[in-house]
Image (cartoon, rainbow, N blue to C red; front, side, top):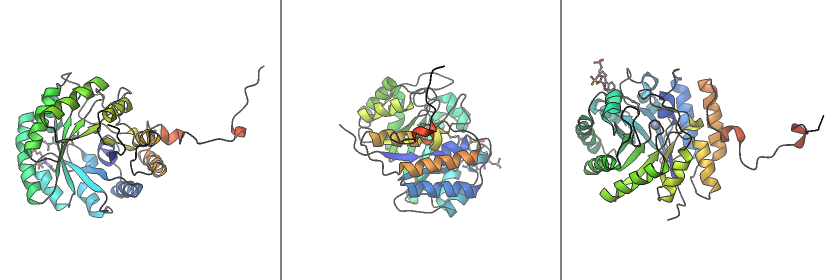
Length: 312
Ligand code: COA
Ligand code: ZN
């Protein structure tokens, strides 16, 4: 099945900003999120309603939601770890709650200080609060393609957690490749196992480019007919509670690839490149994105700009 349209979630204001040691100003984050909405994103992860002690970079989630521009075409989502976070999200009029656990016990313990089973039990409480307030819930699985402490994660485990998500009425499952351990065969196994067990659950893929195969994994997803992906401006991002966690796949690079393949995203690549450059200035260091530097494939230069190779 040829994919003709893809929905990209920009996770930069959450996954990107949580990974920075400097805390950005709330007004700068709001400006970036407004730019993302204008660029055409249908879904943006704007922050997390987690403990500000765990992630001080995102302590201003409520302020962001209060002041950010709302557009009916753009869903504003945020991570929620527990009932306290869900109540904060309801107060902030969040469009969509994203709950998250790790497929592996050790990363779940590091990230949210509890067992996988306790996370699942807690999600029922979150789902209840969300249901009473008509807020849809998306279920993320971190370390879905491998764990930096435990190694391989089985596709069967992903299918079981996805089934629990379905039973709780979640709209879909996002497979998070926290430390970039996914490779095409692992991605195919995961998709097939989930589709076999929970055929009608929407799958979103969230890759990190830690080992340079992020976009190859997207190509694998496209071949499997997956139409939902998550990415980050400039290729920044990473979980502070996982060793060697580097950036997400880069939004501009992904959009460039998809557009070149004739796949629509609804996102303006030029605006996206400007956003990545703006964020690079805000964080004050070079970002790993490539299209933000190289520009479009057919960007042409004057011959006067380059010296001629003459011998001797
Ligand atoms: N929002 C704000 N504060 C919260 C909170 C939330 N959602 N959940 C807990 N807290 C506060 C509690 O009120 C308590 O505050 P106090 O010390 O002033 O009384 C403190 O945090 C500890 O609460 P507790 O329930 O014991 O949590 P914990 O210490 O076991 O931590 C989490 C559990 C889930 C709250 C924490 O690990 C967390 O926020 N993790 C998020 C990690 C993350 O976002 N990772 C990146 C994404 S992959
Ligand atoms: Zn991530």
